[in-house]
Picture 1 (cartoon, rainbow, N blue to C red):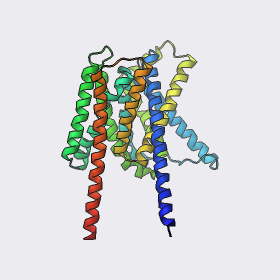
Picture 2: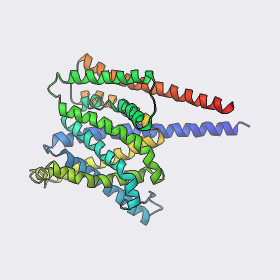
Picture 3: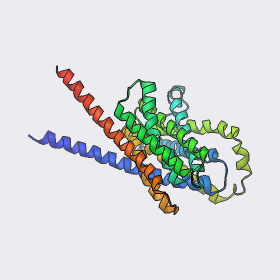
Length: 335
């Protein structure tokens, strides 16, 4: 008699456990990737951030290709979806997202190149605000006054954070600008990911494969325009094994974060992904100040928690609004 209800509860519990595991994996991998990238971008004395990012997507592409080949040969041991990134049909449908993917990881690494890990959170805290603005511009979805107030709170936290960081020697204006652009591209990428997944049968693996392959080609002209090929060729440690080993570790982290980011968006939503990223970054800030022994003012910390509070309130407001909309639709159907 109660079997269907119990089964439904078990399915719901399994869903929540899966979401928790995915979000936890995103947090761990994302924080680890940030610290690894910071070491690569600032610790090896190589002024070529686009090259470092390009090598990461190249490693990711190679991993995806290898796994795809092994899956065809040993389907019982490795089961990943296979696809052809050089198909014209696939290219035309996925390339817009891949351009956003390239912009997102490039801006993130450029921001990290110039700012500290602690400030990296505040520097990229406008993703939620951009998400609201872009949803209105592209989808025509109107925003409530409560949502606007939440966004104003986030902007205020960002503004105070930038103001406080500008009083320190580590402040970088160009790094802050890259952070804002990173927030914009992340918001656009999150919104567009849900749409693009339908073209690859909701397969996160294939989407990660295609994004990395296309991004590897997109980065080439960007590196040439920036003159980084000359910098890399003149690098004193170019032939050192540790240099390529460090880049390879960064590439593995880049592959992992790309995969879990798309997976988190798939099992939750673009909004939840943005909020998860913001909360993760807050924890990341605390860890960074401890690791690097940085002392921050009370007002600096206030800016961080203001952004987190604004993001949390935004999530709650959106949840209430969606529940109310669902109830109204249900009532109208009954009538």
